[in-house]
Length: 383
Image 1 (cartoon, rainbow, N blue to C red):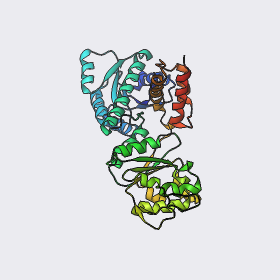
Image 2 (cartoon, helix red, strand yellow; image 1 turned 60 degrees about the vertical axis):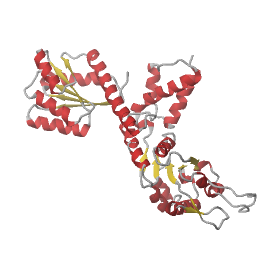
Image 3 (cartoon, rainbow, N blue to C red; image 1 turned 180 degrees about the horizontal axis):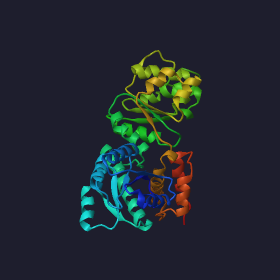
Image 4 (cartoon, helix red, strand yellow; image 1 turned 90 degrees about the vertical axis):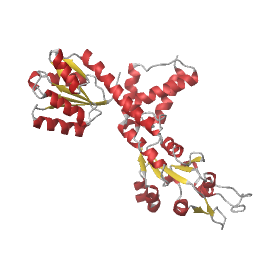
């Protein structure tokens, strides 16, 4: 089964060639999600320092310490490796040793050991299982602690953005969520709202790109009777509808500059005027904005107000594209497979190996939304 992660091979006995053999075994999987690094180090104090620097910089999930033949100082190196970064699991590579020697290695912190000659059938299953347990447990534990177990994915870039949600939710300031179409911007905005003190108040999503330019001000701020031809009665806007809660403005660069100016004023003092009215209204609304393009470019192009950009960009989120979190593709695909298998009454449990390869190597320009629809179609037409 394909897994993601980082593996560090540290060879203390390069004469034996075991480190190179191990690296070739790991690389034989042609796994685009697996990063492998091989280093030759000594068993002296300088070798220990070298090992620690590599671990701190590379942040491996698994460290193979090649101790064949078993060298003096091996236990000290092993202990240092396990203490350098708690998430790293250390596997010792040894020649046939006495049980007491193996026990001492395990006591020093190794989670497992393999013996030479090295065999892929013995090494790879252990690696995949350890990676699965490490990555799944770390991501699941974090999401459970944050109350966000409905989020699917364990990639570091994705989890880094998830970590911000509870902190931002408790603040009164707005937030700006950047990311390509289909990366889950509204999901993040809803999570911020649901974890905030406003959770029992309205969450009002607005697709600014779908509002005709001439009606944008009316949609947000409402209008008075007679404000324009056809305005036979007064109408409240979306800001009034979201009072006490959260207004999510998706694709905010689509708003006309005049409406951007009125929105900026509202963000500053929570006051606004309906179209055709001289009366000032107040609303307690938190505004979360989103864009699928870098707003700095829109500012330089003159299509987005610079002052509004700085007002919104207090706490930014940058959601990674699916092609930049490939380790989550299969996790998401299986999640959608289970979801739509239940909805459509289809008993599907796994993807074929060739389908897995296509899923992992496709660029997914439509990101998670495109993946979801692709899996939904596959489940619907499966027999």
